Image (tube, rainbow, N blue to C red; front, side, top):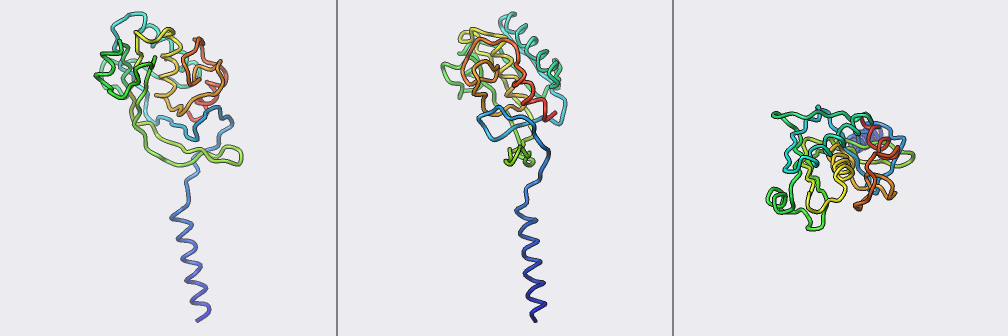
Length: 192
C-alpha cells in the first residue's frame, strides 16, 4: 500500500510539473527594454507601405534598410503583406486606428501569440510570435520621420516596451536620433 501511495504521489508531481512547465525557447545576451517581453516573426516580414507625403515613404524605406542591416530583414510588397505601414496626418490615421493618442508621432499595433520564455541571466523574458502589425507615422506630429519610422518598425518587428536610454531609437519619447544604436540592434537581432 505504501508503494502505491508513493507511486501515485510521484505521478501527480510529474504531471503538475508537466502542466506548469514553461517552454524555454532560447537564451538572450542583451536586454535594453523596460518590458519583460520580446517578439519575433517566424514568417518573412512583408511591408505594404502607404503614404501621402513622399518624404515619409522615403523615411520608412530608410528605416527598414537600417533594421535589415541590423539583421532583421524585411521587404516592401504591393500585395500579400504581413504588415502595413501608413504615413498620414493624424485625422486619417485615427480613422484607421481610433486608439492613437493625439500627441503620438507614431503608433504600432501588433497581433502576437505567446510561445515560451527566453532565459536572460537568472531571469526569464516572455517570448511572443508576431503574426501581423500595423504601423502609423503621424506626419503632422512627427518632426523626425526617419527616427520615428525606425522606432515604429522596431515595435512591429518585436521590440516590446521601450529603451530607457534617450540616445536609442527605441527610447519611449520622440527624440532626435535617426540611426539605430548598437543597443537597438543587439536587443532585437538576438531573436532572429
